[in-house]
View 1 (cartoon, rainbow, N blue to C red):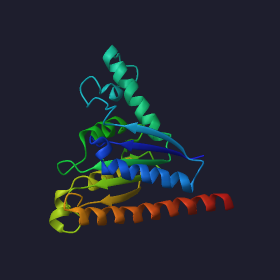
View 2: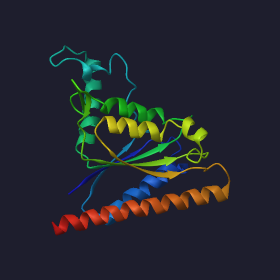
View 3: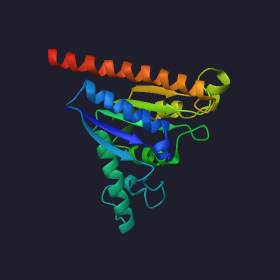
View 4: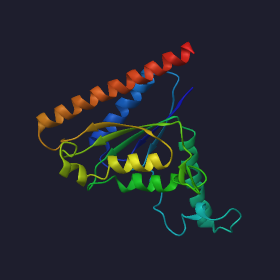
Amino acid sequence: MSKLLHIDSSILGGNSVSRQLTAQIVASWRAAKPDTEVSYLDLAVDTPNHLSAESLGFRLPAGAELSAVQQRENAVSEALVSQLLASDVIVIGAPLYNFSIPSQLKAWIDRIAQVGRTFSYTDKGPVGLATGKTVIVASTRGGAYSTSDAGNAMEHQESYLKTVFGFLGITDVRIVRAEGLAMGDAAKAAALSAANLEIAAHTQDAANQAKASLAA
């Protein structure tokens, strides 16, 4: 049985396209691999506190004396990093907010980026420890950024997520992109159509993996 972690971060609720896409990705993945166990995290509803002196307790040396607040914050960080490490597939809704990701999603990343758990430092530099996982990002954008050098230079959403997950050892990062959503009905329809094709491709990949596993 594989485990899938479904994460949404859009603040738009039912009006969110990224939420629509993550739901489609998860449903398609489960259709291809029915034994998948899904857990869900809505960062817009249950946002971990942003890093502070109190929430940095998990980075203190083992045995350090922690305040009651630090202990509570540590429990949050431990739950989040354990949930990530137990997952085989992570599906993330990541809308573009002001050229980057939602602060709620950044707060989650700050909690799961833990030395000794998801990465380590060596004499040859950092090494990711959260290997063997697949991340599928539902990337949504009001404008078009992937079609020009200027647009690519402005976005710090997909590029950031690929970098941070790569740092953690997750190299299989797939993007389901819907951009130009605010550029008129025709552009939005075309973007969603393209995203649906990408979802179908990832679903087929999951189905192929399941068949290969059964045949092994």
